[in-house]
Image (cartoon, rainbow, N blue to C red; front, side, top):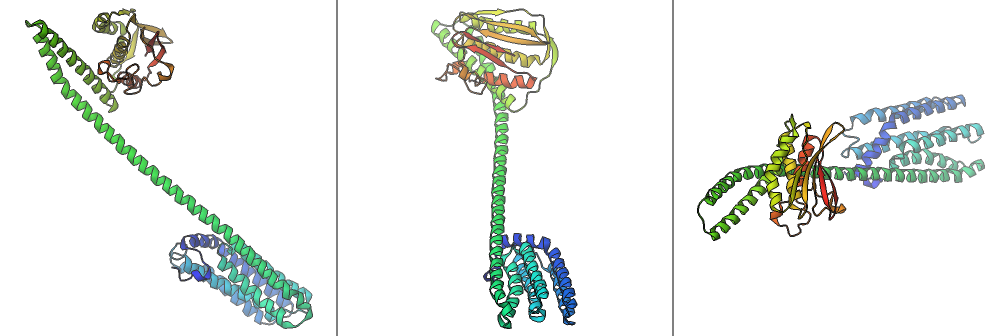
Length: 441
């Protein structure tokens, strides 16, 4: 594929793009060349030229026809494998066309006729300008036409010996040099543009490949995360049964006569079992939520029975810590999933009790614009403004830098946030450090 590089062709990838630019206008260029030849022949015949002009225009027509039609027989002419063959054919065809234009001066140019000389030179200049515009994407192609068309004309001026041609002896090579400069400059600009386009395409392909790799990695991570959640949910569910049985055994053991030391040891065992049960319940809820296994089942229900149930279960724990547990009664009814609402409120109240050392906890309901706003107030440590946006993140805990598992896993509010989203609502927080917090659903 590199055997024609000595002609000045670029690398196959660049050359294929250059030849595509030329190929798009090759047929129009050939038609223009033949039209110019017909005009030139008519002018020469009008000036008294012989029958040879008809042969010349016939040859020009053949060249202008063979090139555009013959190119379709070249395999992959606009691809990297066939671009050099196509460029070589184009160079040969443009050399023939340029040579035919260059033959006009030796055959029919009459330096004694000013109008005839101007017509011939003007037509040659026009054809070169057209070739520059159409074929400059590939420098060897455009150069072949200019050299073949201008050099014979210049030779006429050199060897004619007519003093009137002295100026053209200098003007013709200057014109050719200027054409070579324009061709080289335009070809260089087009080559840079094509190369930059390929660089952009390569960069785009790299970005696309990287994005595909990122998406594949993300998909694999999501699949692994879902699998982890399923495994965690399954393991947590299986572990709940023996822990529940352990709690029953410990409760049964507590009803038997025990020594004080044994009673103290039993109390520690019951506290550990309860803590393990709470952590497993939290992990189970979080894994079910993470796996997308929680689907709300909304019904209409009254809030007061649910709030009383939570009071019966959680008020003793608050009172055991020296806190006041208060509930404001409500007659409101809502449309929601009662199990999810209970789970959210339970997390709110547990957090309030856990992080409140003195004062108390208030559970209340407000009616606001056709909705019920459930609120849990506490007089606890409060949450700094910088951390209020993070408290709903998984494993984030306020006031527990030592990661004391007795204060939970830091998943409660993350579960609340996910459950609230599943219900189509949101959990919010307002807090003042040192004075307390209020969580709302």
